[in-house]
Length: 137
Image (cartoon, rainbow, N blue to C red; front, side):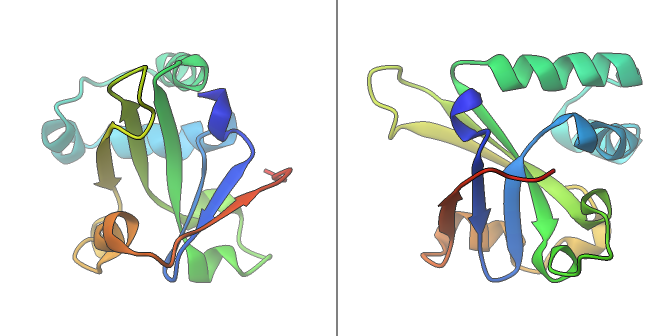
């Protein structure tokens, strides 16, 4: 969804950035995992199909997709953003007349980040701050 293309959300442990084409190779690598395919009820896609899906999600009127980054790694300018990726968040707007109603899906794709409270921070924390600006990705 274009509404989130310039939005960055920061928490204590995570940063959320819009899912863009630079993220696709790492995302595709995750989704080649039979475990993640089973957990997300997903079918395997080719890399080109994954790029098509990313473009489709970006244009979708009722879905916002963010990539979850490890904030500590992200804060180090020597680490490429793709190496900070740990999962994604999908927000599905369920009622076009009320944008405050939505379904939320969180995937922590990197196993060593599971059970660390990242998902809890995303849905419970009041410490997530919104920054709307030009993102350099």
